[in-house]
Length: 449
Image (cartoon, rainbow, N blue to C red; front, side, top):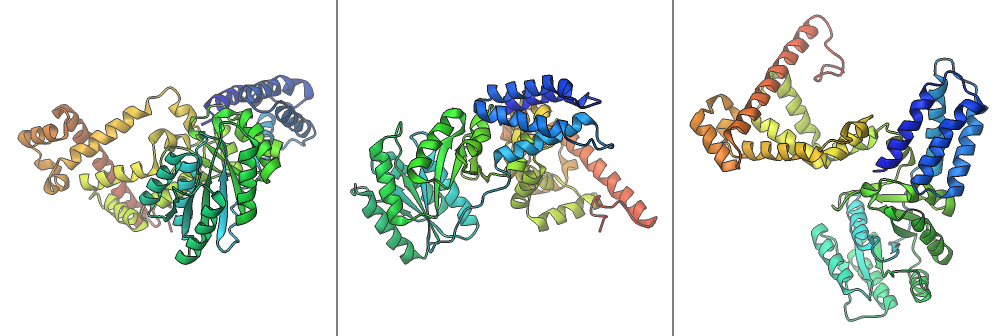
């Protein structure tokens, strides 16, 4: 995500960090590099120019904090301005209607139908009771796709294949929502290859009928400034309330995300960061700025972990670790919990400096290794997982053959697990010793309170 922009900014920051004194002359070159990085990221020219000017004015007029290096202070100013550029704070959905109507609008190929499903999943988790409506009467595949998504989510879908009047479909959807007691109605509307008057007028009539609390424009982030131009046209016609940027995980530049709020005045409310239904996040400007500047996004990582990991299971595992009772069964559970967090490169990328860590690394190799670990452990009996010391040559040969690996790979797994077990035992003993001496290690292995 924004790898190209992030890399170029990191290069510019190397020069900034070395500054011992702030002056208009010595920051000009570094800020020129920042401006070039923004322009190469397809950020709107005026937006980039205003951004650099704001940073420059604040940097020169700023009182330098003695405990902070001048270069670091400029980076802090850039971070603050970047947050402002992205929209300052998270813009939440307005869900005040009874039921709340949400129009999903946009061009063909932006990902409206998939995004409608992702939004339904998010609202479902919040207990909102969404209803999906296939309001695209021109593309039959859109109706089929929405119906499939509804079945996956166990969310009701209104589909009227024979009906060509969008307003009649909308009225049927409103009746259905009241009948089922749904809290939110999501209308997946028709798109075009380009904006045209019939499309706009149809959407205007639909908007006037259902009176949506939210009109969300779905944009392909990879289209850069073109996405911003599309947003301006849709906003003029429909007065959109916000945007959803899709395919952000594949956007190395970030021009759309960095230009949209400044040019249109409308916030980015959500971002799509993958193909799965759960790859959908509320847009937090401060977290996105942190990712762009290579500082990671620990808050989002913790939130993902909180959703994926059962607290009680984590406590039991912690207790086992402390007592040195960590088994292959527990190791298998840990691998599965990690899979729930998402692809390994995304997880590492959320850590401070993580983007640099994964740069040029084939993270898929580690993921394949994890999958092989899982297959090998699943190939063992319950007794073998609990007591790996009973794994003699014949047992190992059987497990390796059954999981499609070589015996040497199984031996490697068992050796690494044995080393991990020894480390757990040592930490457990150290914790007990510290506890006897009057306290233990705060926050470590459950010792802190």
